[in-house]
Image (cartoon, rainbow, N blue to C red; front, top):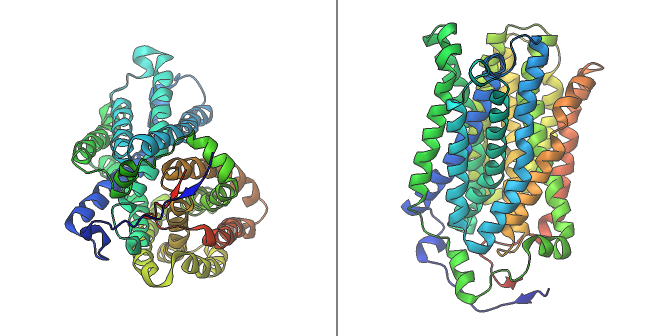
Length: 443
């Protein structure tokens, strides 16, 4: 395996080279955002409806605690398919085109989500009910492994390099938007139909709606064009001629290590500042559940706005520097977050501030990792390292309740420590960043 440099000049299409986003690029960004909205919408719907899903898909004679563990295990096991799907769909995108991964990933997500809404329950098919649910979750995990990398790189290679930070910010904001929509859909169902109807058929509606939403996304993505970067690689015959994974492990091992350390922060922040606080304030501080839910919704809005604002600011100041400043501020905000028992508005203010400061840190992996690999291995490298980082951070839901028993200071420090790790890794990786449109290096 050799690395060579092709210095032949290449001028991008004028609409792409211009620093502003044109109508076609805005359409691509919107289509790229739909997959992340779908992912986090379904994620939150499943979490909110897990008591009903557990009662319907598992034996009725088992204790509720065991049933909860079983349904959440099915949910978690689904993510084991994420690294595998990310690598396979990444290789597909690096060898045969970004557009294929861009369409296939959201089609698979839609199929799996729609299938959950149509599954028979334990009362109908017995033990096959949890088995079928698990298979759907595995398919979801497999396809989600390629969705975000495929969407981000498709959009990133279609816009001016100067605007890539904004693209990463908007796509990160859709995490919060999808979560917010999922919560609002469940709340609307709970307030519009009886609990009996919710258990009978109502729980299926969000999954069916999300699945149809995914199919529409797939249909619209079919009418996009392949990225200019990939088409130019094809024209030059510069696509990877070897095994993509082999190239990454042989040539870019240190880059991959940096990327995994940077990617850790996504799972750490999601669990320690979005999901776990809900349990902590309700179970340990005995706050009203509706008050805590309302504060959480405010925090999601704050995070989404923060992502868009940071995306704009990155054009002038750079994501890495903004993330470093946010980490310092986050250290103070996290210690304030867990002090005492705040009232409703006080909790919303604290939680909103924490989530706003988390915005640069959640953008950081999406901005840095794609620029760490040459275009011939970019999609595979991103999917592999991002997925591995998520797997490593998946132990966080187990760690937080343990350290929370000793002191709230540990809960405050946990995400800050990993934020420092990610930011330092990003600083060390800065020298290796290359514009997405740079295709001189051939593998």
